Image (cartoon, rainbow, N blue to C red; front, top):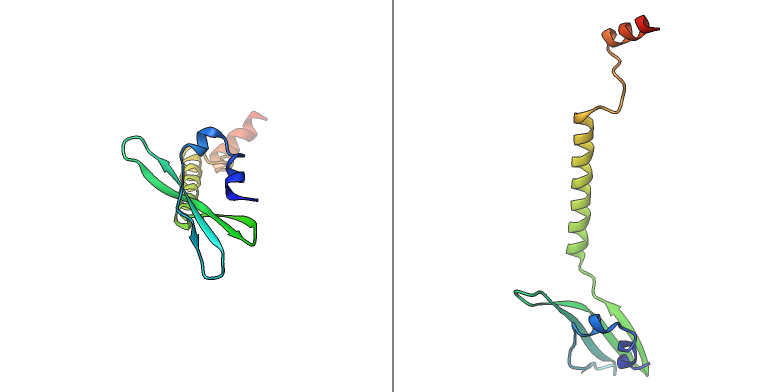
Length: 110
């Protein structure tokens, strides 16, 4: 499958923001085509999306993975869960009030 055959499957609004780099041929005969996404209104930025590799008539797609972004997302989720759990415990503990006075009052009601 040719790389441009795959682009026909991409929706138009996404395909319009994609930029394909110039084909580069390696020593082994593999043709590499980079793909970036242009985004931003005020200050346009280019973010790598992945790479098409064409070798022996077969096309493969390798997505670009940003490890820093994934790690930052994990740290943010962990911090947010810790803050929510702390606020829940400080506002109203999840366990009943078991002090002697509360127990005595409860027994008197029965």
